[in-house]
Amino acid sequence: MHNIQPDSKSDISALLDIVAKMRSAHKTGLLSARPPILVGASKGQDAGLLRRFIGAGLTRFGENRVQEAIAKWPALRAAHPEVTLHLIGALQSNKVSEAVAQFDVIETVDREKIAVALDKEMKRQGRFPRCFIQVNIGKEPQKAGVMPEQLAAFITFCRQQTALPIVGLMCVPPADAPPAPYFGLMYALAKANGLEELSMGMSADYETAIAFGATQVRIGTALFGARG
Ligand SMILES: *Cc1c(COP(=O)(O)O)cnc(C)c1O
Image 1 (spheres, rainbow, N blue to C red):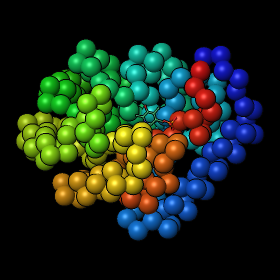
Image 2 (cartoon, protein in one colour):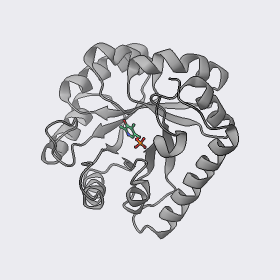
Image 3 (tube, protein in one colour):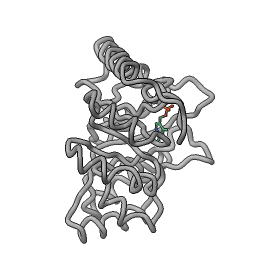
Image 4 (cartoon, rainbow, N blue to C red):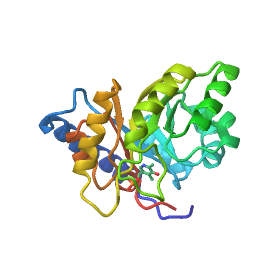
């Protein structure tokens, strides 16, 4: 991680710019009920840069690898207890215990085996991070997530067989197609299943996601610059 980092002035202007764009997308969008939350996708960004953003008022961050989060965040969190940490990448069974201990929100619940393992570990630790179900909204073979047609059954499974606090849905739409139809479908799926939260929208498409009811967006490069 030796990327050339912008100074703190440009950090703050990137943050202000995104917050302003989020606000106007929320104002003009028809579906979003409440102002969306910004989660800084901080994978590949080092602690010094993250400390500056925390200083500028950003408190939510998303990491996509448990190992990287464990290397980076405990010291930062000890100094900044206001930070909320989201897991936004795939979760393997052998990392469930560390994930439950380290994260406040787990956005990538996507199969029964991992739901059962999380349930067991949360009960053991007495710690219940809020959970999102990841949906493979474009039905892409290389991507994680529950298929849309299997979502209702998976939600029922989680609600009946586990104590996971399922609060919403998360997706990463196909990279090579306009995202709006996928965001619209996600909105409908969340409504149909009685879920309030929608985690969707990244650097390239967060304003569209907000117009379609995203309650949180996960932004990396537009906020922090290129990853190291
Ligand atoms: C990296 C990442 C993001 C942010 O991507 P950018 O295009 O850099 O904004 C969002 N969501 C997930 C799951 C990611 O892994």
